[in-house]
Length: 325
Image (tube, rainbow, N blue to C red):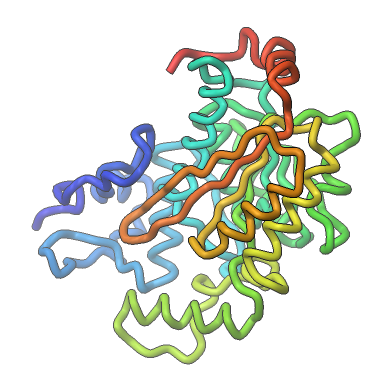
């Protein structure tokens, strides 16, 4: 029986993404034997993971983190979202490219680079991959104390993460950067996968649609792995309101950060984002297309730094930390 390794390349993923080729299930089973239970033959005659089963998705991603990134201990409550590793890695790689472009073709790496993940979540996924791939330090913020505790356990159980990730609880759910970035703190880039839905009902409807598309079955109450806790999915006004709030608040930290960024799931959200950015003293805006499988999304990044300030930043923070790309 052919394995998924023999299927066509996932050519839409970033060139440095470790999962550009379809999953090598035989290799992944060596680090996560339980995955075998959820492997079946798909309609193309290849071995594939049962993506309609939340347990299978979690085991697959555990295996990917272990096999490709050396994260051997990764677990979190089933009520939280299970992030797809290839898509999360793509965001990191494209932001690394943006740093490279900002540094004359040389990628800043290592301990002197600090990234902020807004909404680090129980899985701590962006810091885990960012540390493994680029050696960056991370700050991870979240409004949910249980998510912070879960992320903290993951860090404690993996020696490679020691001293690399600083978790911070956002005690005011109305704030994003306030209470997280110190007045004199310097951040090289930020990440955010914003809440997508405006109501819990909308989130549940989206989860039902996802399960139906994967399994071809109608499900009234989706399994929790496909829904996530409220703070991960729901924000009044949805993705658009959250990102616009983020943009407005970023102005208060204009000189603390080189590149602010966010994922944008809906193409229709971009118009409002660009309008919000026009009201700020932005010097650069970048929109970066991303795609995994049949899903398209994009990153919007912005900076307030003038050319002289960018040059000073490069000299003081990135010099001697980089490698050519």
